[in-house]
Length: 200
Image 1: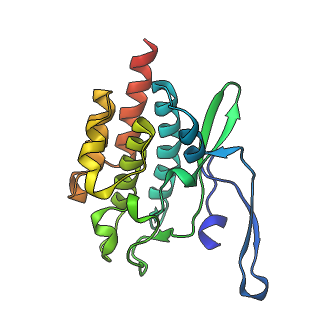
Image 2: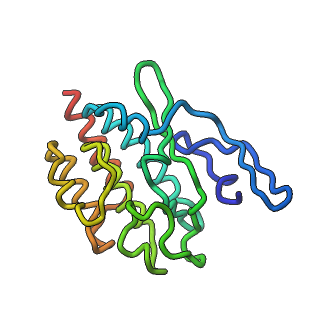
């Protein structure tokens, strides 16, 4: 509740209020149309949709990671937690579910969120915003190939991504060494460049 109440960003699901009566937390949020996972189960996304939705997700994550005085790590990035709404003829995305989120340097539970999206270090207490970068890389791969991440087949799935620029970005995001992964700000810059390139 404390994390959700202090976060306000166009690409984060709007938190309206909460109650903890009888020890059962109830969150009230805005209502969106569908989830990314549902859309992917129905059809493939085109390149512009992938880049646009990926930018929405990264902007929400970047906001969390730049939180002061401590970064907020989402720790549960998945296609089920990316909610979509229509603006004109386009889908736009917002990140939801702060259930696993935590302020950096607080005690962290191991293995948070959906295991299939988890970075290798998510199974330890050594976590940083780079765990979200790893999960985002797998999410971006899923958006391109319409397959849920399979931890033992990550390299094979990435190899199915036909767009070379997106494939290289995914590979950087899922480096085993967190220090080799880009920051969310860097990912935004790359995606914005991709968006401009396609328009030209």
